[in-house]
Length: 215
Image (cartoon, rainbow, N blue to C red; front, side, top):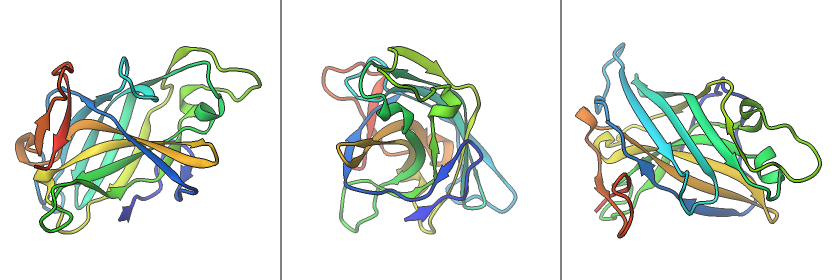
């Protein structure tokens, strides 16, 4: 797996620790821009994206809007707009909540039909840019808006099929002596002219919410 270069959006954390609990989220559909499968040196394509888990059943309630620039085998991700809704639960979950960006890709295993994260940026701690201050007692149930943009860099591994790849946001937080993670899919398909894997809407769900399928 390719690790990203240090990002400028907050304190960078390069290693995970402990057991991992993984959940998967869905994306809110917006328009997809185009991107070259293999960018030529010096050229770049801008890919806007939106991702949200607000009003969903998932534990981390947030929404983010940003852009990914694909250039010279790297993805440079900027997230100027975003928010996280906190609840009166264990405040440690929000004080230590971190975010990284991952490159999800199909066809990583010959003959397989599952997707894997093949590259990740370094993590950014979200409390400072959200204005969440560590203090005793329960945290308020409210929505915290980003007060400064987040930035991430991650490499594109050689041989990655970008028309079968997309971006995910990966949240991390401590839980029961483990590190829980939650993957929130964006609508940023990385193929040419916004091409990407097949989109699937779960039964009974709003068609604005979908997941990418490698099948």
